Length: 341
Ligand SMILES: [Zn+2]
Image (cartoon, rainbow, N blue to C red; front, side):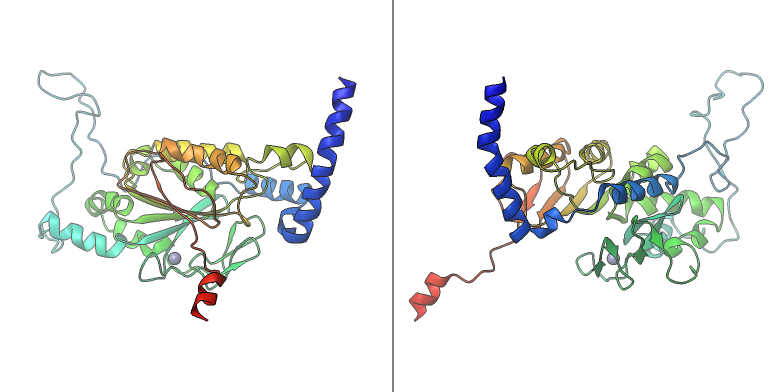
């Protein structure tokens, strides 16, 4: 055993030195990882400021179930599932005089057909309506670890928790005033909030919290999802994790969170469209690490659109349920220039 250990050191030692030297010269970002205490401090702050899980409460705007009958009579439904929820007909309302199809068009114009950026506030989730006219035109300005003021996302602190630049005016996304009009409007419009908007995430924890803080029926009503994420080195790089540093990855940057997110997405029964944008320095050290990172995505199946955009070059991926796109080579081809001359 000792001889094999010595031999392993002789062969692996120079490789490690060359890798560290190469990374320091050409990929300094890889060696400039935040120190572990700093990562730990941010993780602990995020834990303290995490949104609270869903609790059972009386829902003021939901249409209440009628009281259960005291005595069971033949033909009278008695279980809550059988009892149909009702509300008083709003005969004097001009809005309610319209057909349901027209009312739904009005609801969609007010609170649907848009992009909602989901943000991590202190002890709760929030959402900001995208400022751009289209999803592709969404302004992104990154500063340090998070977006800055002129992006749709506002500003976040070092723990990626949203910070208000000025006193918030109105409700998140301005969806509450319509929903609070009356119970009938609430019950008709609320499903459209989830089914017609695209929900956009730059923080994996926000998706986990959303799945745990809203009713499962509403979470499963989401049809369109967008995720942008900066992967943290050395994700799925076993060699680097064991040989170079004691590199503990804290949630949400660790592999367990990454795999949990894809388990949650795979269980979203209503999801139809998913776009994922991933960045990771200049790419993975080898293709095997990248395949490990992409493996959890393969459990998401049956979507109408599933696009994955990687910010680095690499090999083609086959047999995947998603369409993979990598950056095109923008370096001019010297040989063609020589031919032109
Ligand atoms: Zn936006």
